[in-house]
Image (cartoon, rainbow, N blue to C red):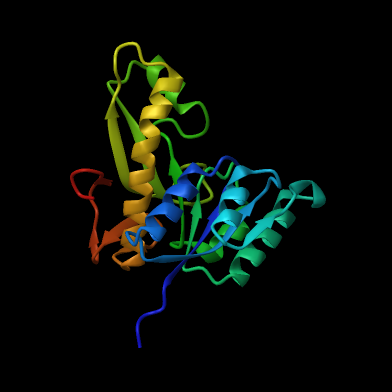
Length: 219
């Protein structure tokens, strides 16, 4: 009997370009996953429209319908759990998640963030990199923990900062690398080669990573 497909749920709040990259890679046969759910906190999120077009189950859950953030997150992740994913991917999901909701998913939930973490957690990462005069910029796929953008990094993509770059030009150039990075990292999960040891050590094939994997060198 062939192994069951690796099941992935995606949470997104916006346009869904990273989701589309996963869909395209799946459809091309380059990523052996089953996308079982795309959920959003915004009913009008384009990510939901992309999922619908691809025949993926969707969920729009309005935070305003819940008395507290904890109550919302508990219901959201109960719905996610009902889809039985092996991995949850936050792809532009613009909410801080309640720690109690995250605990059962430790080691099975990741995020893609547009900076070379631990630099620039949070928002406006491209502007902050330019203001700091950084020579390089990039994106990080990391495990999600209760600390905002603070979970153990798994893999990174690095680009050079060019003279004359603006936050917009940097964002555009980085986005293609974000897509490649996310696909490559999810592929490692689908091959069951990546694991979290305890709360801080990332293992590749059972060996702890000293530094995050690098797109173009390790991936």
